[in-house]
Image (cartoon, rainbow, N blue to C red):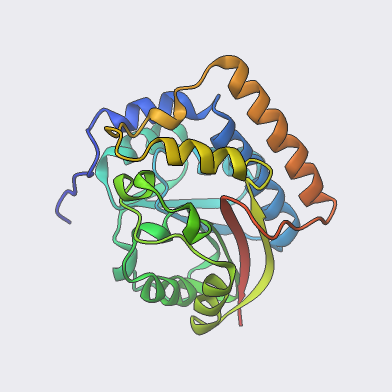
Length: 250
């Protein structure tokens, strides 16, 4: 397969890899994903992450499910070097998810903030459903609400932000049954909207949203811990910066 270069500067992957372990967004999403996989996905032996980036999510899952066979794929080659270092026991490859042709291979597949980058997301979901074993699970996160669309989305090469209705419809069309759905980054939506309005027409740096003070990071982490506690208790927010969905192959 020919190598694929990212839209971003090459150094961005090393910078993100250095930030992930301490940044409120990555840490909070990892905590929510781990809870969802433990509680909404039945025991599984094989797990594929599509668009694994630097392997931050996969590393967390591998630590908590040491007996599972993990696989990772990434469209851009720059991220894979970090993923291989973080999860040396996993099998990695470069892959365009729209060209995935495997059939009934995996018990579970994850796509975390990946679908919004893909024009043919419906085709991708069908490919992922095809790659799942019968009754297998697909776990996805995507950015939510079109009214939150901003220069950040454009510069991050997003194709869309989803509505819950849209994501449900595309899942069902792919032959997947919705098992669990929640918004997250809900309590911070007002702040998120204000910050993104201020960034309009500003010269964009992909790391701008990550460059925050230690105190700000601590406070945002606290808000997210409270929000995740509510989700674990069964509270579902109708709004949020992101959506988490678990679906099962019919």
